[in-house]
Length: 425
Image (cartoon, rainbow, N blue to C red):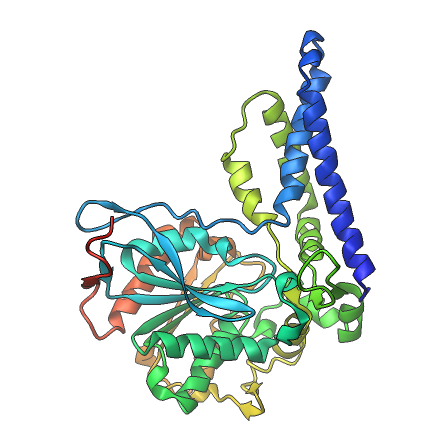
């Protein structure tokens, strides 16, 4: 499947469905049909509206849309984004809140490169902003990156994190969500040997596959069942002529989305059927629960082929992080060299992506870290999404993470720094 034709075929199918939806919407809304009391036209219009929105969202990067933050001065402050470090495959993004005193907690949120944009963590960002000076890794869509930019695998990802941490300095607290947890742990260990002064103060790993074999799931079973040759043949395609990354080998976002949906096909089918009914009855809204969820869920990005394949081979199949045998640029990274960075793991009992046991394995790898700097939390009844963005995160996990950060900051909790711009609105 490693051809532009297959990539362009998928894009053609997506584009055709978007066009069919737009056509049905326009026909159903034709004024003359209002003279005919037939509900079929209302259903046609509703089907078209839902279908057009669904397929159009698949190629659009969502906006952050962060609401204003209420500060200690009682005023609402707008939130802006600022690129601190700009790279080909991803940027270090800063959420700037002009006019407020900057919180002492400097937090780097490491977003996954796993098919969705960093905006998947929007609710996590919103929950942390009032209490933290927040940064995030904003990974780029591989289809928009020219082939001349070169490769990007898990070693490159790790070195990006190293550079971001060096930029932020030693007072940083890192929260890694899901897929990047093992690579963030490796980046911290790399700094422990190469540049100890740039290490963060704390590292919180949420639902990450440190040791995928500690608690097998459908994800780990799939990784072991498929050979690397099969994965490369089935999953990898070349970006078509429509995008700047033409010719780049990628794991296409549309192909990933089909896999996501097939895992819960009945649930998604019912969700869209119900939404069509709500639109036909005039009960839907632009930002209702369905649209808020699927506008983000359907917005997928292409993943560099070498990153996807090296993740499966080295993290899941060979377990290089779990065995403490990971190498970066020919240098072995020893996780046991972490001696000063406090490490906390967070898991959910109902996590079917990174089951309990996979993430807490990080604590056993930190052989050079005293028990006083290790912590773990297992959230009862929480699924994968819930432990970083759902009700469990908001009510229980977030306060625990902030307490962990404060306990390892060496400063008074929440003490504000000087305002970034006192004259700003």
